[in-house]
Amino acid sequence: MKVKINNKEYEFQEELSILDAVKKAHIIIPTLCYSEKLKPFGSCRLCSVEIKGERTLKPACVTKISNGMEIYTHSEKVRKVRSTIMELIIASHGISCNLNCLTCPKSSSCEIKVIAEEIGIMEVRIPTISSKIPEDRSSYSIVREPQKCIVCDRCVRKCAEVQSVNILTIANRGPDTYVTTFLDKGMGNVDCVNCGQCVIECPTGALHEVYQTDQVWNVISDNSKYVIVQTAPAVRVAIAEEFGAEPGRIVTKQLVAGLRLLGFDKVFDTNFAADLTIMEEASEFLERFKNGGKLPLFTSCSPGWIKFIEHNYPEFLDNLSTCKSPQQMFGAIAKTYYADKIGIPREDMIVVSIMPCTAKKYERVRPEMKGDVDYVLTTRELAKMFKLAGIDLLNLPSEEYDEPLGITTGAAAIFGATGGVMEAALRTAYEVITGKNLERLDFESVRGIEGIKEAVIEIDGLKLNVAVVNGLGNARKMLDMIKNGEKDYHFIEFMACPGGCIGGGGQPIPTTKEILSKRMKAIYEIDKSFEIRKSHENPAIQALYKEFLGEPLSEKSHELLHTTYIA
Ligand code: HC0
Image (tube, protein in one colour):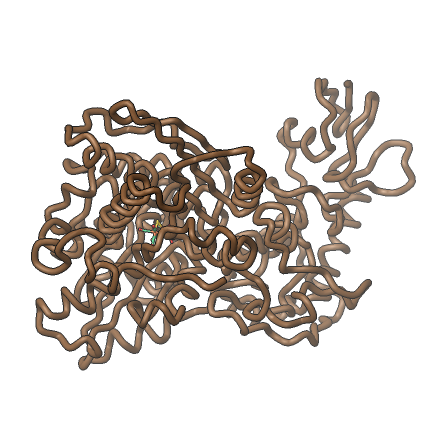
């Protein structure tokens, strides 16, 4: 197809949208309702272009190129219309108020701000129209501020198309259009799984996590409390982006130094508990496998996934591992074993988690978790705390985690990427089953960003059918296939977010496919950098069993490290 773009001729082999064709010509058209991961919607009209012979402008995202088409992406007419559309977007959603911008928590990732500058908006001639829809603070994880919403529908589509959760919808028409939940009940009162993928997708500050930074500042400065912090595997490969670094920059040791500067009494690692999870979960799998227990075994560390299965597939709850997530196992061990070891009463110990995940805020308050963890901050919230304290994260000296709950392995590091929990479990299961040393540690077949991966792993003549699933839309597909008898596995890893925790709802924005790949590469680099790369070889875990738990699946383990689910 021959197409002219801004008077220059191009040839395309496929039937592309104008937006994709123009991208190939290295021309940037502003978009708001468009997102690379979602079906085009064509509602904001910012990408409108002029086509020779057409009376009206056409949205580039939903209009296909055709042979002989002549497109003008930045003609005077286009520029004027785009500028008016943008002014309307700014005015009708109350964000033209400077004060809002200055105090908006998502100001640094606001797409409206960037586009307004690109289009050259110098003034808004239309008076601000404020939304009367009240804020939604019903969820433990996510806040909705409708007055900042531009009704681009990206959150609605992300929730439906990628996560298949479908709790957001558009209500009303015309200027009264707004995004809401079923009967305006609020996100905390519908089947929201708290994954925060809507927050990652939102181009403005209309969706963000429930902030807990104030509470954490308060406990840090309370001398009567012993405040310890744990950092999730995926935070160390992403937080640097909040400081302008290239995605995938590993700042584990600077992260530790920064947390000490903030004033935490001890800086520990969720990875320690990830190793502990492998001890319990691999043992649970082997026990079910040998004794005819319920299979396939589903992993249980992603709280968005747990809520999804509880709401949508209760018939599969017995397939879920009873293991708590590493975040919760960490809290349980810190407030018993570690508190006793250093002579601190449990009630004086405060456990703060730094997570890439908004659902961890909800997981913390589940009644079965018995207060193991006190506060959960996302990667973005921690970056805000560092900035507020004047901490220059990228240039801090390297520091090591405290012992013993900061001693970890390469196996734990890979939990942060889809396939990591499975690979870590296989490294341990192999050695437990065979009694032999596993030479080749890299199970490449379960790695990578694809939504569903399958592999047959041979251990001593035993063939294990395993699968790895990320993103809840893919989880739904997988569960339906199992239900219909199309698939049969022994063990499946599920993670709620695309890419696993590296793509969690609390991670830096943007989180694109390309950024996910860079974070994932960094996760495997961390694994390689460890001398010990198998969870059962972690000396601090070995000591924990010897001194306190006895053995995996012991009575004490069950009391502290295992949980139940709600149908
Ligand atoms: Fe994850 Fe986890 S790997 S869920 O993604 O298992 O959030 O990073 O912390 O708990 O370890 C998130 C990440 C964790 C937990 C761990 C698991």
